[in-house]
Image (cartoon, rainbow, N blue to C red):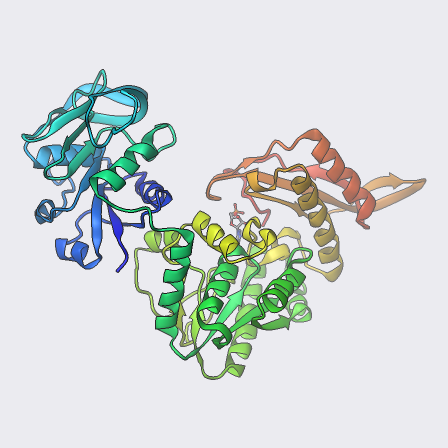
Length: 509
Ligand code: XMP
């Protein structure tokens, strides 16, 4: 069983971040509901617990509390913010609304000789966000740090292995926060930094072997990092039992299909079925101009193609899915065994009877990238910006035609190339070209032209829920404009989209 630290989520903004930071300390960590039963904690092999922050007040009626027996398990516990106040209250200390809110960077004064602040400076900056304060530590606890407004900003009872901090060690605004976490993990909880990329891969490979056995398994490749990493992991586990299916709908970026061939067939020697279905998708998209109708048409056609391939691979009942840990946390379902939808490629039919294999279900995106790199996937795949399942079809406004696809693919390649050349590619969430359904007048040589404009869209974002238009340097924009107009036939103008989301969206359709 894997050693792990469980983060009990009391409704924190930062529960995911706590788990990620613990993993950055090379200790495996998962998020669980705050009311997890003690025997479940033991069953999972937890070696320590972290109580997250949360919006409630511990003395309020109905405030979330963990199962009382949790304190009797003898596991090391670290309480953060609300978690800190919770330990104080449950163990007999006093928590009050002092009327002084601490918010933002705060000076912390450490009392020497504490486990949590071992070898750390006695004065440091921490990040606070709280209204209530622990005003009196419980019996048996020692106060280990204070601030102007928090008389008990940190406390510990080494005997009972309970620790609390009012500040947030998990956020970057607490510069020594990672050191505090490490002291908790390595000193207080006696854990070893053993959760490395190599052990992640070994573990995942082991689990896939156990699930799949001698059976055959298929994996749909999209060209993105998740499905690619999942495929390589599964291949490492079960070799030729895996067949990858890559449906080229003709709506991909320049070089993407070749890259998939090259990587999976030639480099990794995998069984790869490359379905060249460009004409089929184009025929299906004929006359379709409405954005949602395009998505639907592409999604349905994709299902047909995939079904046909799956039927050929008759005795295959396992399907690789690139689900990530945040999807699992958000959906709240831990054991969805039968397929309902395939969000990467627009939905597979409900009556396909596959058992899902999700080798990335415990990983965050940055961990998937690290695994991908470790397994030898090329940089272009590991660091590729997100790309919508319906592909270029929703970046061509109006009807999708072969001619327009050609124009957009070339223009898009130039945008990406110049952004990469300027060293900006990884800083941007997405950077791409759009082809609107209009023509404008220009003059080239002595000739009047009547041709398409290309829109440059580049955004920064954390999660695509909100986005800001990227301030690309003028010289980068100049090179993009010159090159697109000179090199792409059918384009005589380049414009820049300077809208943020909301109220705009990242894509134009
Ligand atoms: P919007 O345009 O809604 O896009 O701001 C947010 C993010 O989602 C991607 N996107 C899609 N991805 N199928 C997908 O797989 C789609 O139909 C789709 N539409 C938008 C978009 O690229 C951005 O990252």
